[in-house]
Length: 231
Image (cartoon, rainbow, N blue to C red; front, side, top):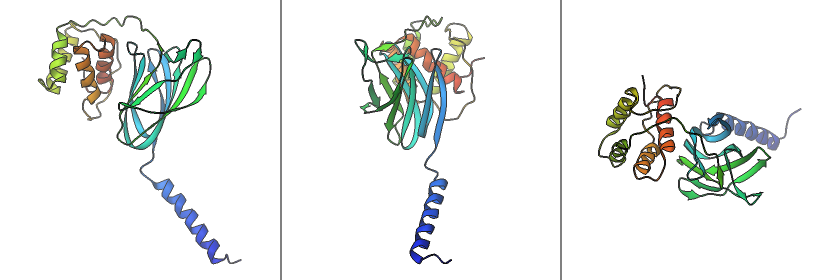
């Protein structure tokens, strides 16, 4: 049987569309789970790669860092015991910032244990802040930082010392047991350098805007990503 010309064009167009979609290099995903203060946060990011998730209990927020190549979304399953948003006893909305801009989101699932959010982002966005009303207060991290180290962190954030000097200083403090960091699994270097949010954290810590725990989480990120080697 010979297909009409119109049907042949339709069939060719459909097959060609499938080929374009399947061969597009601009769409990819990253799925996994990150342990945050002993709670698993499941994620599914489209058109991006997750870098880290950490809790800032002082500001009652989760901070997500990522690399994005196109507009996309990230789905996060957040345990209520880690971060929640409540008004009296009922669920309230989270306040979401994507690279500093307030952003709407969709809550696609919630139960007594967790809430699942889908947050959109634009190409190039790198930091998401999820702000709630109740956050886990971590126990002592058994970390100790001498106050004079804040001077070094402030100088680095202000550009008075370079990345190499800062990293070497932190390495010395840890190896000489002047600074104590919780046991952290080291990783291999990706060669991408120190993310800007680490330097921002150092400046905020030096100014007293964030606590020792948040600063140490940044140091742990450097260790797990192979940027800071501790022997």
